[in-house]
Image (cartoon, rainbow, N blue to C red; front, top):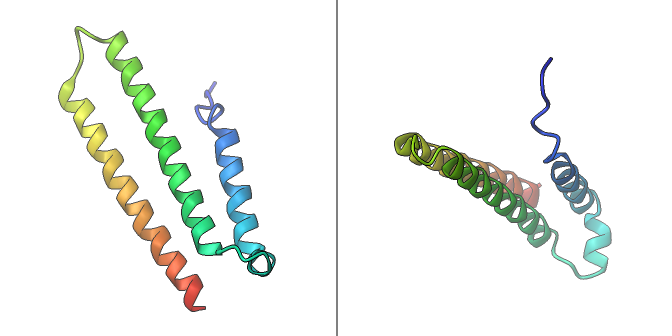
Length: 104
């Protein structure tokens, strides 16, 4: 039987999808209110990045406390590097998509 590891993150994922959808589809409404859609979308992206960062920090701390004596520092630092790479890729893709939306 497979365990679903996304269970605790599901509310955050759903909230991100809902808010992003509202910000994208509600452009006209937001403009009438004087709210910049781009700022809201960027803020939504940065909130998701911060949430992932804190989740990774918590996971790393749990790993460190559980495997204190057998801690594999190279693997831990590699995971930190992978997090940075994926975050940079995510931000660059979302920034390009946001720029394309502005020009459309």
